[in-house]
Length: 317
Image 1: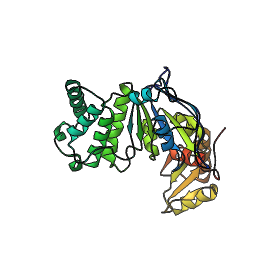
Image 2: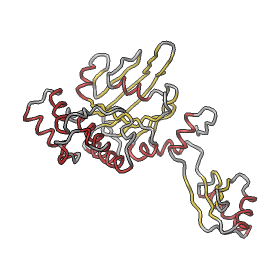
Image 3: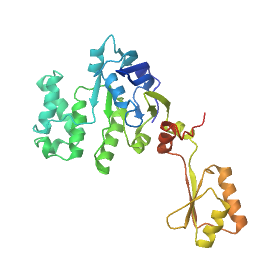
Image 4: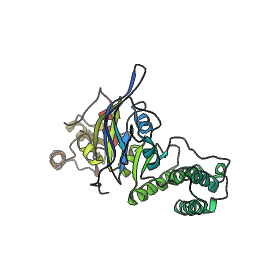
């Protein structure tokens, strides 16, 4: 995906929020380019959902500057509400209504006329492949279908910024993939997505930019590739033919760890060209040739643990 050069869809400086003596947000700064996916990552209680609630005008901040879709939170919160859509952790679908009735309810709340509302509903039913289920009650739909309906309801007002708060929690892999594809289509249409998720592969697959929040602060912000380059991680996994080869390799690389079957040795680091060449040269000198090897680079899991665990931080400057 290509990052937009336009004004940011979401601009945040010095955002603070406390509840009593508990500081939930402690000076958050965010820049979300328009027409991109921006992922907020962090452990439970880090402040992700509180951030989304502030940006979507559900709760008021104690201090800080917030501009969403060109509207200042303090001066024009209604402007923000007209410009955004929100899909929360828990579905807003009325299970007793049909799929079409849920969409009609949203059209009425947006004060759309019957003709305009009908056209928008028909378009969303087609876009989310819900037309065949239009007359079914939401409670008779699968979890994946209800999640698609939830997102379709968010889009009835044609928002320019959509907040998705852990949208794929509880979905099976197929339903998650459908939602991922939908998010990519929305961004292709110019919509900005602000995503919170506990699934790091989801952020890696979808996000143009990632911000990692811990204890109410942004501890890192950048593209997934940039964040992964900051983490000291990755390894070389050697698959060895027999116990003799394994023992020789294990003696040569005492920092390696054995697999469960004593035929695989994992050597941390050494994932660049020079490091990999040194490993192979050392094995060649011992007369050991692995059946095959795997090189794994750091992933967002490594980033997450390195940035949010103060006892094991391994982040490059």
